[in-house]
Length: 382
Image (cartoon, rainbow, N blue to C red; front, side):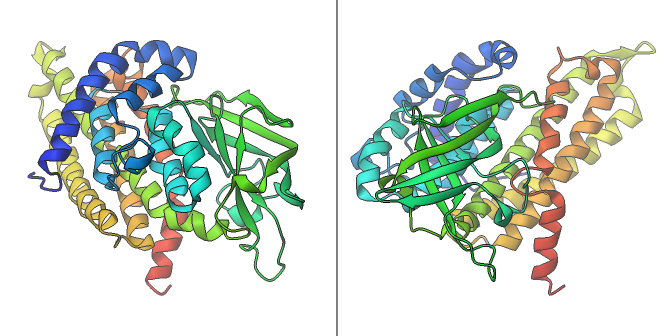
């Protein structure tokens, strides 16, 4: 169906992104999957092209364009090439907004140039071994000691934590028995701070290029100058960025479902069964037709929400609706696509196998499907 959310500038950016992905990422992707990470130099190359600094103000080396559509284009182009941008996406879509919203002038001068040129990599540490969706229950704590905080605790499932130079850690700085959400603070831990350790690199079923690690903090002395925003206000900050984080997952789900359908159409046209192309069977045609209809419905939903996000009008419940619908759609579509590949779909050498395993986490991170339903139900007065 016709899409009209992008301008000529976005399409020019698409051409730049497509050329880079086809030349610098797709040919090496299998190697990076085996290594379990994307090399640092890719970030620097992206920074050199201006891709990482699109939203960063001009005075710090960026383009000053606060427009999420550029992020969406980047995800769409990665999916088209049957790859993902792993920690690049996390840095741009999930982490950078915290720096843009809450960094003071001194912090901007220290960190923004490196974020723009790709020499500073980031991660955000929220999830703990004993807490998932219940962020208010986190135990990592930071105690004020003069002009520093003493940070202690452990985090898990931290995307990009292996190579990160800056890690935004959500820690409890005070406790209010009447309000579990109060007292959380964002502290930026820098690589090399004594007491900051990286633990296991976790072995995941999918998203192999995206390193995911455990982190620990043993009385790490973090300067007050490394605090993002006000003390005790982190829960609200996290909520403010959730709509974009969930839209990021939704955009990726639709783009990857589209890639799965395209790859499946190519396959069934070539693959023969009983002397005929698999594409000639009515079941194949009906399955792909139904998937196409679901995909276009999801795309229309995402496009509307992207525009609302850019205009600052996307509500939390609507972001939850979009994430719930698109990630569940992705799961159905990729599963049905894999079925049309038959036994070959189960082989890792075919991209559909990776699209299948990568898709599963979309219904978990940035809020599970069940959490999305709770949010939507509350908006209905239930």
